[in-house]
Amino acid sequence: MTPFHADDSALSKARLSIVGLGPGSPELLTPQARIVLEQSQAILGYHVYINLIPTELLAGKQVLASGMRREVERCTQAVEMALQGVDTVLVSSGDSGIYGMAGPCLEVLEQRGMLDKVDVTVVPGIPALAAAAALLGAPLMHDFAVISLSDLLTPWERILERIKHAARADFVMVLYNPRSRGRDWQLATALEVMAAYLAPETPVGLVRNAYRAEQEVSVWTLATLPVARVDMLSIVFIGNSQTRALGAKLLTPRGYPLG
Amino acid sequence: MTPFHADDSALSKARLSIVGLGPGSPELLTPQARIVLEQSQAILGYHVYINLIPTELLAGKQVLASGMRREVERCTQAVEMALQGVDTVLVSSGDSGIYGMAGPCLEVLEQRGMLDKVDVTVVPGIPALAAAAALLGAPLMHDFAVISLSDLLTPWERILERIKHAARADFVMVLYNPRSRGRDWQLATALEVMAAYLAPETPVGLVRNAYRAEQEVSVWTLATLPVARVDMLSIVFIGNSQTRALGAKLLTPRGYPLG
Image 1 (cartoon, rainbow over the protein chains, first blue to last red):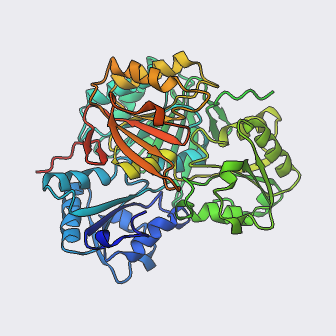
Image 2: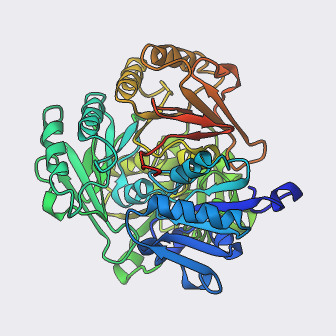
Image 3: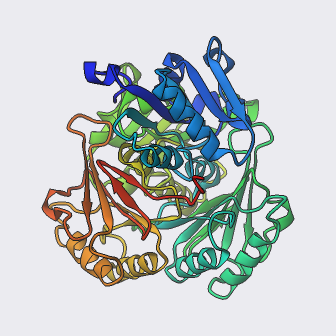
């Protein structure tokens, strides 16, 4: 809880916080994230995420919004500002620790041998997987695997291997980055691979823009998911062998005897 | 966002909210969870979780705290109260959608044929996996599998199968319910099984009481994890083949070129 009870040694150190904003609704921004943003001097992030921050928290701050795929650049800039004594916050949507900015920041600090010069605090946020699951009801009541379908940094073959193992182990699967304009074939291929292991009627949940304007929640099956409607604002849940659709909700039973 | 903008049809319906409290610190209780608790008439939950709720939110409410392993009983009671017109909240720690109360509540409603009689809202919370990961730095920057080691409701052989597939697929693993007084051998056995697939120096993170009094965060390896120190207030992270320890932190690189 460093930001709230900083001791003298921490005060003399550079401070960098990596904050998860949650899905974007102010009602799901944690008080800790709000306090850290309030107390900061500079806020950096992808411009879409900066736009999720309530404007009163940006007022009077140095705000540096940048474009897509500038992750390492943003981390480097944030580290440099923190080392100059600026109380700096780097934001992610969802949780900054799940495919977020916490990792590349630590890597930049490690590469520069600066890990002990900067007091790094990761402030958790409501992850996309939890926000989307809440809107679907209860898809994650049992063991699950979280897999990004982005092959920008990970070989596609490794992603497929993970999907095969997850299917064979009967994990519920949560697919991050399922599809984008530039990556338009991976989801369909992934579903074909899954079809070798899972029944065609396996329930599938699709959530777009969770807790934002234009929120969409829908339930399909492995055979009927409308792939073309999935985009980079979406997250996809593939049920396990026990998952069932209850109207517009998904339920993966934990196994409690109902008596 | 039903609880905030209820329309007339919703007002005539029974209301049941299933709320994730996060790890327990008020700074990580979302504003949405706080509002739903404030506006409720009755709050039900395991007594340890009821104790995590700020006392001002309990004042004037019917509060029903019950013991361990009474999940279905609590859900049944909550459903009955909601059907009687009481605005009812059932709480979980962490996120109520991850091994939480959202599932058994939907099952109870389904069994009684009451799914369309009750307006169920799942309010997400900071999951234990995100809270603990934040304290460890960045263990979840790449694909991961979430596995409960509790064999109370799941056959132990199925749990081991999932561990084997997760290890072979090089998932980071997050172990929920790793060990308790009554389940004292499962973690050691799981680690032995993992040792057939993972290097003994694979980094392991142990977090106890995340964001609560007596918080403990430590980094070990698959070979050195002090199993006897793990209890039911703990969550364990097993790194993938790329995870490294950076002092007291864990980093699983995403693969960004640092240039």
